[in-house]
Image 1 (cartoon, one colour):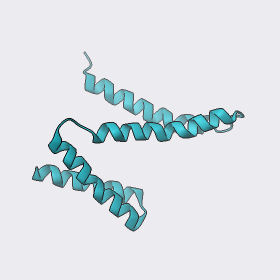
Image 2: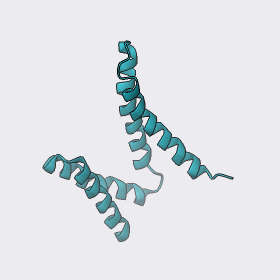
Image 3: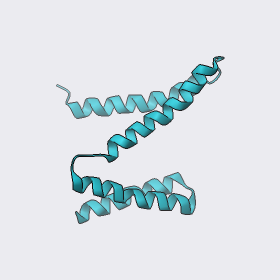
Image 4: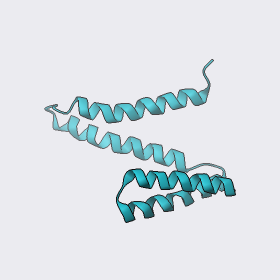
Length: 100
């Protein structure tokens, strides 16, 4: 039997993939409504994933996740590089989890 976590990971992966793939596949659609919907849907999916990944009922974990956002924001404003910013956030999250 497949666990709930595996199903959740598959659902999130599929949603993220489709949110990025469909706008490229239907790039030449003639309807402006479809173009508008697809351009906004990827942003809304990423926002929903962000909100569900940050908020947790555990107060200590919530604090670690919020604290890990600061290096992400600061490094992005400093270098304007998404990859470096994500690396800074992951590294800070790891170090904070070791400390807590």
